[in-house]
Image (cartoon, rainbow, N blue to C red; front, side, top):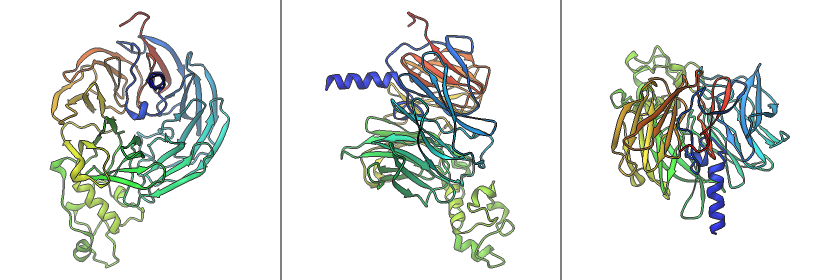
Length: 468
């Protein structure tokens, strides 16, 4: 047992096989990390790569990424030690899908194991390759109806590849066999609309492996073996993006979307009342002209889920829920069953919340970075604020999530401003740096190295020999 435990700890520190590393935690301990990183500082190697916004998956000897080039969707592998390109393969197909200008055809990150890698492209579906680039299986999926384009990444659990496909119509969760690509189960999620969060897993006290998924208005957990819903928590915002994290038996999550601030909430009439009072042509739907200006959504097309130019009952209910949803960070006690909103939500916090970056739980402190370079730390046991401040030289937008290791927290802004913190609730700046390019991808950490993807390159940073 001791040997197994030591091996598990070693592997956690030496690999980073999915978005945000071990179970989405954003943490890798075990070796000294550089005190400063920039385009010129502590660079171990740098490799030119295709465009894309996915984050690297790191195994013992490979680095996997996805990208796009000349209208082609690409999976590629680099040698971990040197950054040398080992192989690159075009996806079996490429379907151009609607997406936000900040999204990308290669946003979802790969997930890997020792000998295989698994990728998802919204323009094709799921594909698996061996470590040497041989295709193992493919699962065409879509087209998708996500208003801003797909963004969630696949995860591995108990021999299955799990992919959340929340979208404006026909949302679902699917699990396919890791070895064959054959569907093990598929769960429809009709109450969900578009979201972008990548799931995490949890082994509960009943012996079940759960896959935990933030979605529109609620957090849900499913049994990995069967796809059966285990528990849910209501009260999330309508459009979630960040990855949850688990520490012990508590889950932490941050959700923010436009219109979810307390002073922006609006109680709207239900659909029957709207039809009775405003459906002038009596067709059972609402047009732009029929809805009073004071009740108009800011983006009509986002609420019009089936894109027919009118709002039906489902559209209106989604809009009503959106206007009463609340942005928050929250803590949820795990091991529940059923609707545990009232019994298992430990606390919520509603100030200075990030949009995209995930919350980081590191050394008993929660870190939240929001646009403008505003960093907030919270006490994970109570949700009480510890420190709020701006990062110097980094007053920018943030899409990459914070990561940590060796007592340091790394934050990188959209324009490549790097801040390295000494980890503490009363955080302080150890160093700042510049990547001189845009950065959307979350960095990866393993075995004393940190990898950062910019618009054109992948950097491997490492501390100088003997550094502390």
